[in-house]
Amino acid sequence: MAGAIQGICGVVLVIEAELTGVFPRSEKLVEATRAAARGKISASEVDARSAEDTKSLVELQRATSLDACVDGQLNWQDLFRPFSKLFSGIQPGALTRWFDNNTFYRKPVVVEKVTFRGSGMDEFFRYRLLPSKARKKAILPGPFTFAALAENSAYPSLADLADDLAHALRETVASLKKVGYTHFQFNEPALTANGATKRHLEVAKHAFEVCAKDVVEQSTLHSYFGDAGPMIDELLDYPVTCIGLDFYATSLNSLAQHDFNKELGCGCVDGRNSLLETATDLSKFVAEVRERLDPKSMRLCPNCDLDFLPETVAEKKVSLLGETKRKLVT
Image (cartoon, rainbow, N blue to C red):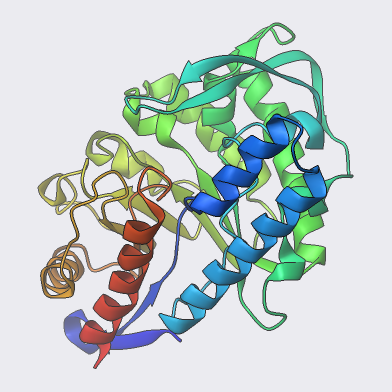
């Protein structure tokens, strides 16, 4: 459950905690996936193992009092691969390094107009494995990052591609709302990691005016792998309810002079480092963020996906989020 603390000028500040991306697969699931690739077991057996891992993650989120529930995207090979099935006009391409990490994704190859197919959603958004009363959170690629990292052979410009991707993502959101999702996070590492230009920020803003238009509950633009400081004024003008920041790449000093008029996704747990933070240090940092930025509310979260880490370390970091929230609100 969400907690609250006394904010600046006596205003009550709501503090929640949640995950922001792909969770690492267990050794059993990795072994099952490899066995299926060798023809040793069936795809249905892998799916059953994945469902067990998802149920374990759901229980971990419940036990640590996280406020929104994710399925961990355990059957997503990367952020884009599912959309070669969910959208028309996209094919998986060559393996490509995922920013400056030792992981890879298949570059989406756009071969014709992108549209939402309207089928196959159950395979990648496993809402049936989430508690019926949970606040279900879907994590999606941001339209700019999707367009910027794709190989485009069908559209005359990045802006045109981003616009159609945004429309397809908008229909994805509408479909997910029908099955109970209320929180939609759009991951946009390309905005910050690659140093977006003014034109890029304009393209991204227009895309968000499309894909986040009908999200009245909770919409988050989550940035990571780069410094959001130079573009924070532009990001705060985007039509979303929350801006997520990677505080291992963004300096608090670069944000302190800005009017943070939205909810803040406080990426205070490092998803790329196995070193465990402490709840005491995290709570001190979050208190400083609250004092200096005075956001509308705060969502404690990892700065990025946790699947860069071993499963046991990721589980401990999830527990740290819950512990930090408790220290702040009690």
